[in-house]
Length: 114
Length: 114
Image (cartoon, chains in turn orange, yellow):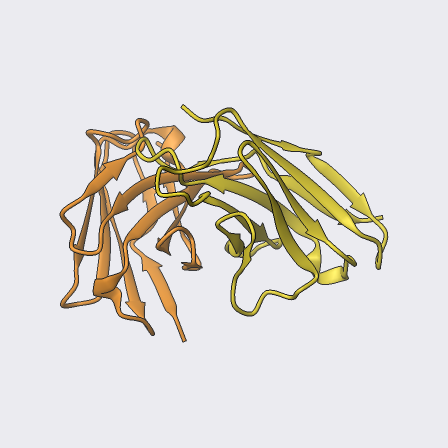
């Protein structure tokens, strides 16, 4: 069974940093691209970042470019999202997802507030 | 950037009746490789999104056959042949053809039981 488990969310002040992680199991992690998506409270879905299976190709949404960094460790079946210079509008549930949303985690809530 | 427009945004349906959701893109979603990267997702209340349809018309494993996707170019439709109570939630279309800049979603359509 495919499982994606995100952790690392929480309350952080504006301008602060947070690192999200996603533990993957049940599939060959090193063969699949991965994505981070997010959903602000009561809002729709938004793509955040993409990383290829090898980690050599990376893309970011304009809204997070220069502030967020995606990475993966294929040896540990782990995906990460380093979030710096956080703003109030980054408040959302963050989901890791396999490929083009083939599988999703349960999400982790990030709240940016003073 | 590609804009995805869904209609209707609210869809009250009687149990056992069919339902249809439209998704239109501002540009053709036919990729240079010949595929059309249009996905449909279901998000039940309080749950993570779940992919129902990929490449416009391919049903994901485990998705009931009452769900079907159709369309081409810029016009796409998600059809539910007979709505059941468990189908309540928000449905999103997402394009992955024009990449980068990244995946873009429709606004979401909220399906409720009349």
